[in-house]
Amino acid sequence: PDRVVVNRQGDAISLRASLGGTEVVVNPEKGKPNAAVASRLAKKLKHPAACFLSGTGNAVNGDCSQLETGHVLQLGELALPVLLNPPSASALTLPAHLMVGMPVMAKVCLEHTDVAAWRWVRGEEVVGK
Image (tube, rainbow, N blue to C red; front, side, top):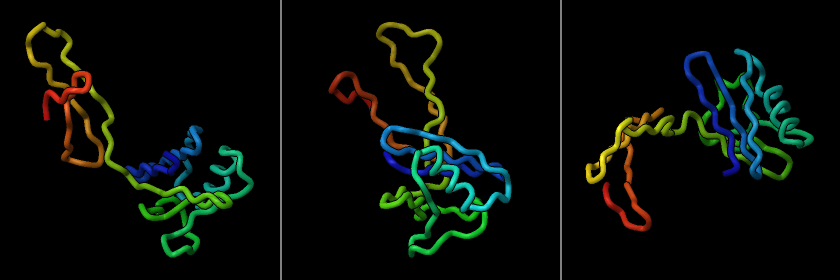
């Protein structure tokens, strides 16, 4: 989906913008103004200009530490929603040795959440929840 995902862990910030199947990543230095980061994203996404706006339509001043879920990256007529540290599954692993007829449980590593709902499917059939 078209959006901007902001991953903030301590002082480290990474922004991943997705637009029409194109995905770009920027890792701004601490304290870099939002306007400069928005311009860099616009250039990478091949748009003439961009700015970060709050939910009320005001410019988000300061650096990327001020970005929150509910803000948008305005690219001309397009408005990409900003998501701060959205829940995600960072890894999915299976046991090294599988045996026919034995149940298999995947190990899922979650980021930014402690809970998750899941469904295990085989073809179209749900075989676990």
